Image 1 (tube, rainbow, N blue to C red):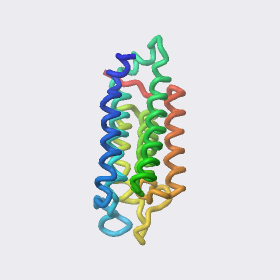
Image 2: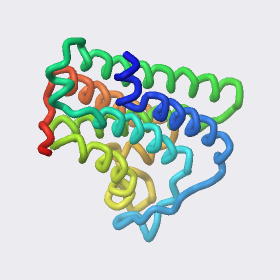
Image 3: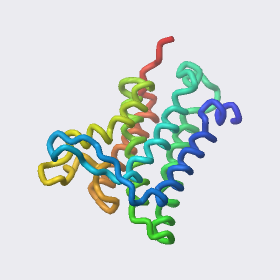
Length: 197
């Protein structure tokens, strides 16, 4: 178990998620201008909606640190531990975000949890079908991709551009949750491209 914790950088992932959840309320009024092709020159995205990328990328990177061949032939059910780590992280982030929303009055906290879960889902899907090294890159590129072609002429994001929606969007939460569940199913079924050395 200690080998698994070390190899998958669980402590680093936990620290990255904790820093994300701590920095979100502190940077509530900050925004990042992202380029937009359809909705004007730039889209101003609240920084707390982009910060969860650090936690999601840390978790995805930790999953890919161990050689896939070693995990596939391990005696213990390593895939179940990986699924438990991701599910536990999603539940914990959602609970902490709900506490932040209730007690700190931070309106973007649920959007942060939604985006972390959605970024993980996209990364897991890409990781499962294309390869582990591309999962983290796909998650990191998603906000820029959504800002480029996911914003309509009125500056309002399309339904599928869920990372750009406000924190209380039910459609965005459903899309992120669906992506996360699909990513977990892909991982549970063992669909992953083996890396070549």
